[in-house]
Image (cartoon, rainbow, N blue to C red; front, top):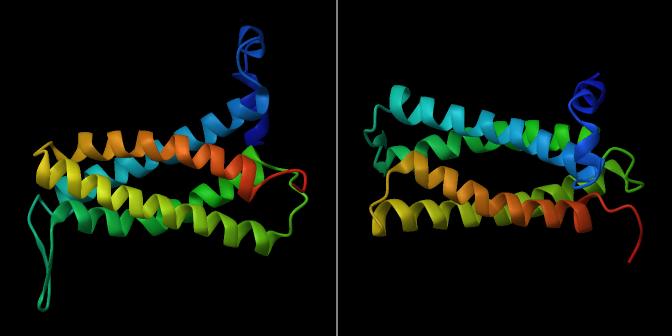
Length: 156
């Protein structure tokens, strides 16, 4: 069903500039990214109200607390979309794909955390635009990693 909806938007002029496989990845990644940013902004602004989260003797800045809550949610929605829509048909076993996906996501987690710390604490940039910028960097890394490592179609 989702593939049919995506293919409906794959206009003929796109065929000349963007392969359908890449278009599916972009749509799935875009939907998951929009969901990620929406949840992040909602948690940061309305749940944590831009105030530190105090967990006993641990104090977590609100932009990191929001990120830590959003991350596992979009990890699962992203894997489902990538496995079932964007890279459907990979001959690799499900467990292998899941482990590889998790490794790529862990790398992106480190890039996200470091990027947020850099832009918010050292560059003094606003948290939500910082999240958007860091997400753009991670998207490029993720696409190449997912295509050539996690869901590859042939053995190297």
